[in-house]
Image (cartoon, rainbow, N blue to C red; front, side):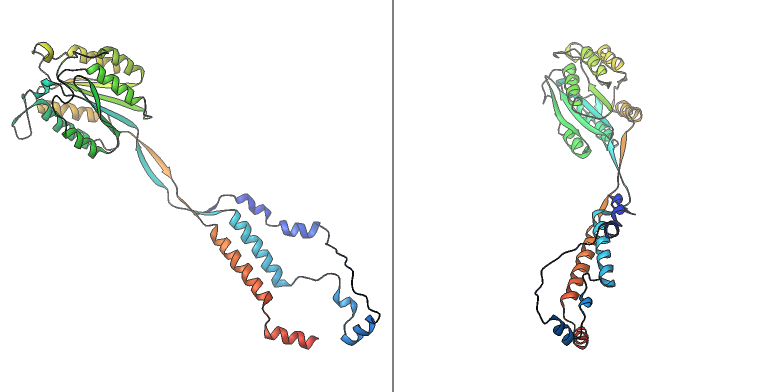
Length: 332
């Protein structure tokens, strides 16, 4: 569709005509050479003094050419544009952060993989998380791992292929043998502080209890709630274990309830996969649709026509056409 950036400039189209009507004719007086035999000269030439006149009428074609040049100049200044069909782009409206426990207890081989073979908890978790991320098209995803301390493994990104690749590189103990869930939540809050997505969600997966955090998980959860962050907790440990490997279900439930999330417990891989399937249904993907309509500038077309027309008109004026020369000779 053709449109103009400055259509109001079309009001200037009759401006030359108004100037011609309203402004007085320009007059100029110049001294001429006076000769005593002027009458003899006019008689010899066959012309009368009035033939020269004080004004000269512009020819029809010259007037048309000037009018066209003015119209083309205005058309270029109005900036004609061709509107292309609108383009629709979806951008993520949710930031999803995965918190993954890499403490020493994640090396316990009490899970099975898809083939039924015994695997450690982290291997089973990586398989489930990979399937979960494969379905998250439309979200920005980040990954935080924690052990003795919390670290950002994947900053928020829409490149889910990269996130899945880095998830497969996780190893038990790479962040230390202990569990700092509260510090991991605190790091996640800091990551969310630099995002603008309206929906913010954490999914924390752990198999132990918090043993070394500077900020208790409950306190971190209250701060997250105030920031509008929802935390879901997934427990995969053994509640009957003792010491640092004992699963602190009460703390995980408190974190989930405080932020409006859910608490889930999985004792095998199938249950863990079912939990993330439910989370995928609860935390539906959100996108904002941005519409952009490309514009192609066409001002150069009337500008090019103006240059060609003006150049052609000047060329025709300066060229001595044989037929016109003969007419002038006959007239003189």
